[in-house]
Length: 185
Image (cartoon, rainbow, N blue to C red; front, side, top):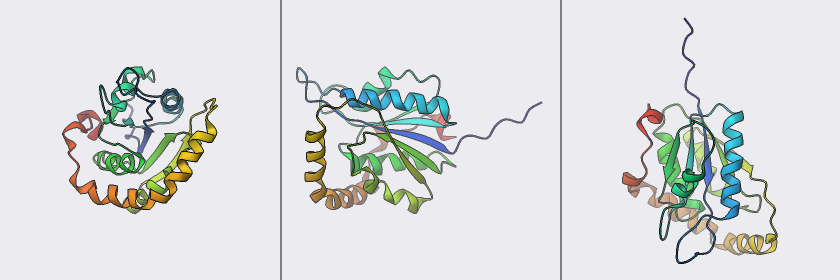
């Protein structure tokens, strides 16, 4: 009889991204779809405990639910974090869910190459014994100048946004962000 394999210490975290409202509905962008597809490939290559999909919804379903609907990555458990409204909140709100999975010490964050503020917001994971690496979804992007300009403009607010998100992390309403029982154990 073979001994059961220990559960993985690794989680993939996919950051949501919305397009502008279409017909008054909050929809994920083509870049977000590319992130999900990249995470599917990573989940097939890596031994991961779960894939976490992170992002809110202003109207309609959250980005996390929309990503879950298009997921084609097999039977890896999906954990939905549906409350984050920005990258700083993706980091803080996801950390609570990751910590609810005993033994997780590695997180691979899937985002876009232009998303240069992401490592800043995830730097505190090391304080919790979690190693973070970043993978960028390949995507043809004709709007690089637009996205880079947004990121550069947002650098000014990055520190205050991060501090606010981490400060508020103790007041997270977890009713909509619970890991499934089979992932937490």
